[in-house]
Image (cartoon, rainbow over all chains, first blue to last red; front, side, top):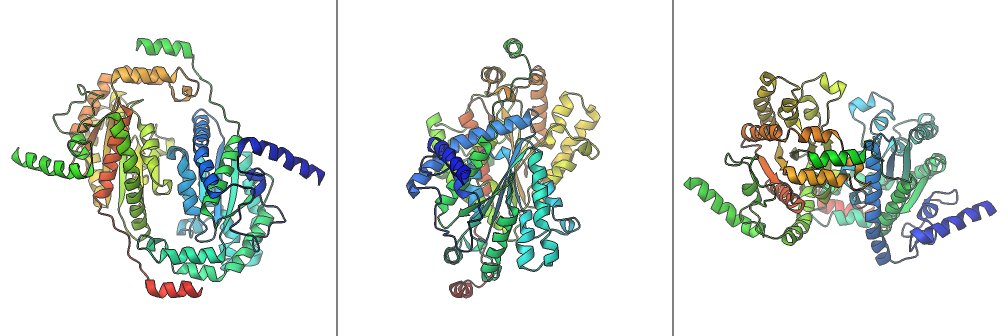
Length: 299
Length: 299
């Protein structure tokens, strides 16, 4: 207990410097702990953040420059023989805001350094392989920020709730996926796992809103109501995913998403933290700078 | 002649409505014509645009919203069974600004709807196939804006100038690539081909600048000076590419790039025009809206 308190204190100090508006650091505030039960949590909450919406939006705008700068350093490192990368894994029920996160958070950085991959229903070719095959093929290359819109974790969510696999199958996947992620992390990829939670009421409002405007119809899928009818089963599956899939190298973070401004800010902070943790410099010149200056002057 | 004049007049009228600062429409002003010789052109020019840098930057900022809206419509169409897409092909010598174009122009839209592909030296696997194989695999899916950073056209640029193929080989590629692009266009992809030109003096200044700051070293490659030494040969190859590779369905556009603000504005306008040409609406609901409203209300 005292050790934990000490950690929190240090984080708090660091957070005061780097994250105005945050009472404790975003990573600490949002990282899943056994006390967090997503079946009863407040999806309109802003854990760790004491500021207003205006404060949050201002902070997000301020982060844009730093995030963009860090991303360029990562990209430069990848171009210069580095092997590190970042992988943002997004999970969440319909309307929780995965798409908006990509647009508003990932959209802050140079698209050249980003590789976004959505995981829908597996194709025929994908079904011929194990469920990790397509995931492995989609891992970010050195220097890149990879983004998974849904991921291998669907194998203990949709596959479980919709009965696509028997329990004896899907229950094995937690350990398999943890081992897989440990391997990915060891190869130089910082994994940021983020689960987005919207309340049933807010989901209802967002689905209804898609039926009110013709520019939103394309986002509406009648099948979403079938998924909605299994909200409690999905939350059970999510709770188990968080419990069994949170590891030291790849912990889950839990984001309340009823307030979009908060979820965008929170995920921006987590992504920024991940990039900061790499302590990225600029690659040194692998040529003689003074000599090249002379050659350019004469060219 | 009179027909051409009439076309220009119409375009001018349209441009006055839609592109303040442009004397003639960007597409007309920038599309390659036989009178354009890139060996003698003014790379600091702003053809068609009569505004100042400030005007250009203001206009670019204004375009962001429209471009983003059009991209979302295209994406929505792709998600709803549509087959159309847009492909932006970027060619240009080192330092002309291909990377900056992706960052500043393509970065204006939702990264989820963009697929960026760079074409460097072919890999071993790629060399086992014809030069169009990897290009075909990288074509944008329905609903996407694809971006080629270099492209199949290198096969009549670097392959020609560096002697990677004999003339009897590379000289066949113009017709092959035109036929390939006609096929791609017929399948529903609007192709926007853009060649970026920087003057030798500005290139020298940009190379020198990369040696002045440690955060730019990674962009510097001593090999760029070897390419620079062949500037005239490359311009000959570019001129032939423009002459032989400009077709009705996939014309080349020529962008003077010594002024970065102009090149970003010009390419933004061309991309916006391409999306406008699709006359994109919003996909109609493929479900009964009123029925779904009731179901959501009861869910």
